[in-house]
Amino acid sequence: STRQPRVQLIRFAENQGYGAALRAGFHAAPGDLIFYTDSDRQFDLSELRYFLPVMERTDVAIGFRVYRYDPVLRCLLSWVYNRLVSAVFRARVRDVDCSFKLFRREVLEAIDLETRDFFIDTEIVAKVRKWNFRILQKGVKHYPRRAGESSVRASHIPRTLLVVAQMWLRMYLPVLVGRREQIEPVCPRRSAGQDIVRQPAPTLGVTPNQGLPIEPREAHGGE
Image (cartoon, rainbow, N blue to C red; front, side, top):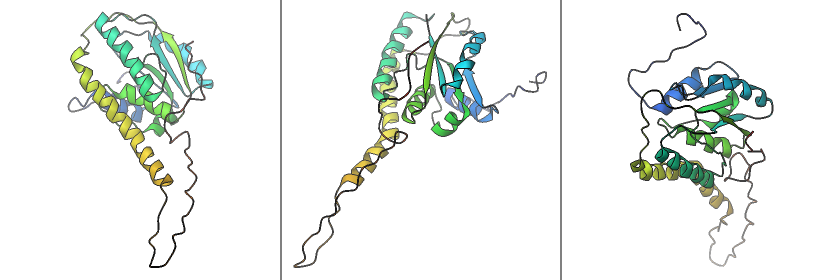
């Protein structure tokens, strides 16, 4: 960063988690388009040039790994997890945890990320879907890991299921409660000899941005 004034280095006194690091980076990024990827060199950054042109017709461009150079167990767990997230949040994203994503700034400002750990990719996809932003998916090359090892284990499955359930409840339980309050008829108290006059229940209006998951208007096909 000393040789490149446009590069900003963000430091934490202690490890606060993958999600916390991404959120800090998103907040510090000055541009109208914000991109992130991992630094383990499993992606070719030059492929970003294929993502930039499509931003004219989408809000989020999400990569999916065409061929994964990961252990068989991780690939299997990822396959199951992608389908779980697609079913729960109706996101239909092929590769939720692919760390090759490009956003319009207003998307990140709108979805208000909270996650501090590696579930932030799931939160991003779920909230982008809930707020009905346009998503476009593009295949990217994936390369073998050159250093370190994956921390994903089969023993993480119970916690993963719990986190997904908690995330859904945080996002949609207030909507369900609000919906119930709107459709429940209000029965006023009556004094002796007074008839109850029932008021019609208010018309329920749920906008795409605040409602339960619905089918998206945007196309989700990979290019």
